[in-house]
Length: 347
Image (cartoon, rainbow, N blue to C red):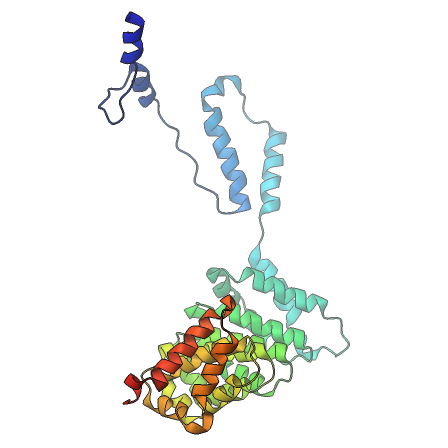
C-alpha cells in the first residue's frame, strides 16, 4: 500500500500548478550560451560552424590548447577561397560584351552568351543590380542589341528585364536613357521571335506599375506596336502581350478606352474564334478586363457582326469538364453575363 501511495504521489496532473524541483532550479541557473548569428552565405557558414564549435567546446577549454598556426592558415585559406568578388566578375563580363556589335555572323559566341547568363545570375539581387549600373554595366546594351546574333540580342533584353523587375532605380535609369523606344523598335522590326519575346518581357518589367514608363509607351506608339504583335503567329508573343495589356488596364484606368479606339476588340475577337491555343485564356482575360465598366467596349462586343454570344457558347461546350480550362470557363461566363444577360442590357 505504501508503494502504491508512492507511485500515486509521483503522478502529475495535466494543468495542475507544480513547483520546480531542485534539479530544475539548478538547470535554470545555468547560463545559456549565446548562439552565433545565423549564416547567409557559404563564407558565413564556415564562420558560423567555427563560432558554434567554440560555444559547444567552452566547458572543456581546460582540455584544449590554442589553435596551431598551420590549422589557422588552413582555415584562413578556406575562407578566402570561398570569397567571391561579384563586382570583379561583372566587370570582366562587361569587358567581354562591349565589342558585341562588331561580331561577324560566323563568330563563335559561346563566351558572349555565357557572359550574359552570368550577369543574369548575379543581378537578381537588387543591390547588385544597382551596382551593375554604377560600374558601367549599361554600356553593354547598345552593342549587344545591335549584334547580328539573335542569341546576344535576346540575352541583352533578358538582362534589362532582370535589372528592372521591381527595381525603381534601374527603371529610372532606362527611362532616362531612351530604352523604351529602343525596345519598341526591336518589337516592330526584329524578325526573330525569341528576341521579340525577351524585348516584350523587358518592356513589361519597365512599364508595369510605372506611370512614367506607361507614358513613354504611349508616346512612342507602343499600343499600335503591341496590336501588331498580337497578330503574329507566335503564341508566346500573344500570351505576353495580352498579359501586359491586362496588367496595364488594372493600373491605368484610361487605357481601356484607348484600346477600344485603336480597335483592339475586333482583333481579340478574331483570335478567339480561331483554333484554341494557350493564348486564348489570356485573350479572354483581357476581354473581361476591357468590358468591365466600359460602355464603349460593351457596345462593340455586342455588335451582331461578331456573333460573340454564339462564339462564347461554342467555346464553353468545347472545354466542358476539362479541369485545366476552369479559368477560361469562368471568363466566358463573365463575358456572357456582362454582355448578354437581361440585367446588363440597359448599359
